Amino acid sequence: MSLQASSVVDILEHEALKLGVKLYLNSKVETLEFKNNKFIINSKENYYKVIVSTGSVAMPKLGSSDCGYVFGKKFGHKIINPFASLVQLISSNKNLEMITGVKIDGLVNGKQGDVLFTKYGVSGSAILDISREISSKLQKQKSVKITIDTMPSLTQSELLDIFMGSLTKTNEKDIVMWLNGFMNKKLAKYIVLNSNIKSNIQFIKFLSQKDISSLVNTIKNLEFNITDTKGFETCEVCAGGIDTKQIDSKTMESKLQKGLYFTGEVLDVDGDCGGYNLHWAWASGYLASFDIINKKG
Image 1 (cartoon, rainbow, N blue to C red):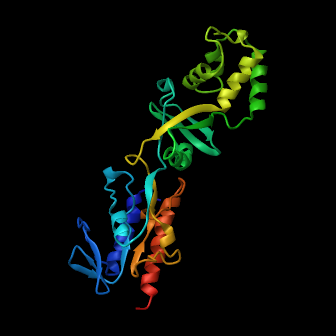
Image 2 (cartoon, one colour):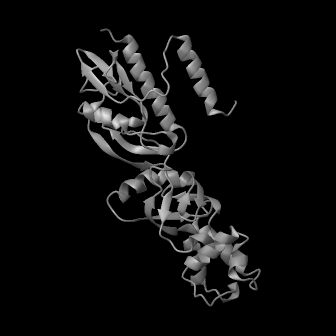
Image 3 (cartoon, helix red, strand yellow):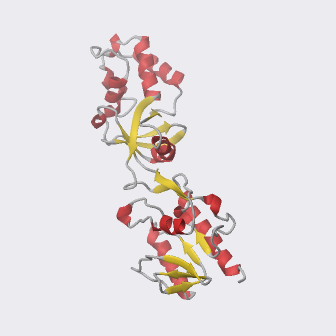
């Protein structure tokens, strides 16, 4: 009810301390070795079990690190090359400044939600949900095209009928003013510019049915050429990481090194927006700790 993430941190810390857990702050783990059936941290601390929950390289400004990959590789684990997921997309489209700051409810590649147009491209929840797929494709190709349905509540035929009906009531308005009743004014200008309508046509009375169909098609299929993502600097999650094939899915223990566990985003697991990545962190952490507590020897 507090709507503060710190509330979760505070209660977890409280319970951990109550149960005798020792917390070491500002204590960077430089080395992790295994000798004489014990893990040795920083050449001095000895432990029988170690959980690596170091996260990914997403948002380095918040303190992220690739150390989990380094530790995993030291024990023979394969690292799936990390790339940005849940990330804003950069577009090479022209005239993006016309729609910068416009936010709509849109449908993008089957995902519906907020779409925010920016000076560099597109953002918003619907964009973040498709960003993993786009980011993955960009590892192999220079650009990827996406289409945004800017009015998903209406089918193409329904929207065409509405437009045709509107034309019979007034024909003295210019095209942008006419569309202004249907959508954001900035977006209306951008859509007209990107429709196959002759530039010398200004008023709706000069629009042909073909022009109207072109407008409707652009509204329902506004195309963006994506050339890059905003990368690790702003992504909320990374795809890639420790290969899950080398991890016991029931315990999160390494199949290559007994007593070594990997949890959370350091693994090659990533989900959509909506708390799925947090859920994975809690669930995998629970499995690892449960196994350590209940395993004999």
